Structures are given as C-alpha cells and as structure tokens.
Image (tube, rainbow, N blue to C red):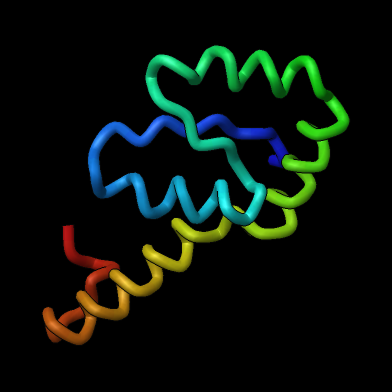
Length: 88
C-alpha cells in the first residue's frame, strides 16, 4: 500500500521483524510511549513519509499470505495423503 508505518513490538517475537523493517527504512520502531511522537514526526515530514512508503511498496509485494497458504496446502497434501480440496 505504501503507507508509512510506526511499529510497536509488543512481544519479544515481534522485535526481530520490526527492527529489520526499521533498518531497511520501511518502518519506524517505537515504544508504547514514543509511538505518538513518531507518528507525528511522519505527519510533520510528508516527504520522508512518502519515501518510506515507496521503499515499503517496493520491498513488500503483499502476496505473503498467498505463499503461506500455498505452502500449507502442499504440506497438508503430502502429509494427509488425500485431496484436501474436498476435505471439510
């Protein structure tokens, strides 16, 4: 979508992804106490926000869920040994 992002990792498992996005300039990693100020900074600097959005749009194709679903479908077909399209 190209929307600038302020991320707030809530659990330790989210920190790696949010830091990686921040390092690539795709998002700003914030804390609960700094998130509003970081969002305000994006609003105050629309050129920087737009650049962040463009970087994110180039880096993220939006098809991750389709890839995951395809992988799960293939795995279930191998493990289940049956046609999962008819399983319900």
